[in-house]
Length: 403
Image (cartoon, rainbow, N blue to C red):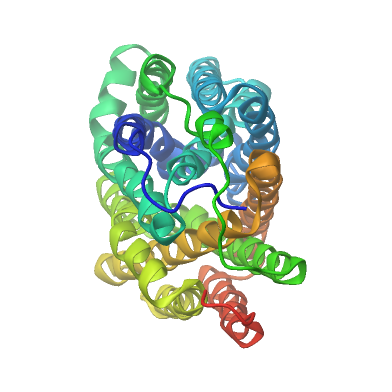
């Protein structure tokens, strides 16, 4: 049962602390998105290996999601999230060392550990919803997500600057964004450990239960299935296309500045529309927004596949739509899952779902390099759009509830 019908007095403070941490962590998250594939290709000399970084840090994030959820369930969100960001910082430092020593084995291990930062960044949205009233959960989730925008958009646009810093330290330029990630993730961990008080999950558990509209167990299971399916599909499709876009651009003569700009627009699309997504989820319902996500992602795949390789504007549009579709699916899916799962098991179930999301992302990242190497970037984009369109029929299985 839900425990809140109005906003808890600590909710504003908790959201403020989460926002501050997400601004910092966004810069750390952007490192792997922007140059991870290029770094692997440069060190291994093969386009088919370009998808490995996304696969490795998403596999790492899958394991981290379970561990973060377990710690959160036992000791609260504060311990789980702070520990996750600190682990991500250690992974980012390992990537820098691997690049400096040209050690591919260390690179892969470090990318796996670095995935903890991505898992933590996503799990923070659940902390924003713990003390939110049911009718404001979409907006609470969106507040945490949108905070990631500043750091995540700034990070890719600092590729040149961080590359110059890395070079001055006798480290390959492509490792520069990971230097930024070390400091960003560490700072986020410190903010959460010092300031996330009271703990939102532990506080929510301590409150007396308030009655809510009845919902049978089949309805809860249905909401959980729809929410999980939505987030798995959007992650699979988004990671696959996002991973190979920098490689596609690099192979067709685009510079790092242009690539960084396109990824910055993509990341802005992932997080900046969150307030609108949250408002739509709370006002018109979860399922219509799920359908909108599928249609938007289809449009992204079509634009990316049809765009001339030399067209920065069209690739920018495609990646912006890719981010927007992902955002719509993530906010609506998160709200569905939070609706369906009781507080007693919420952290554990959320961790398992985020693990499934990470596995989907790893699959997309791993497959993307092989698809492009054996076929083409347009083929990958078209396939991703068709997969995302599968979200639309989910509206047909709407439970007899206003969702």
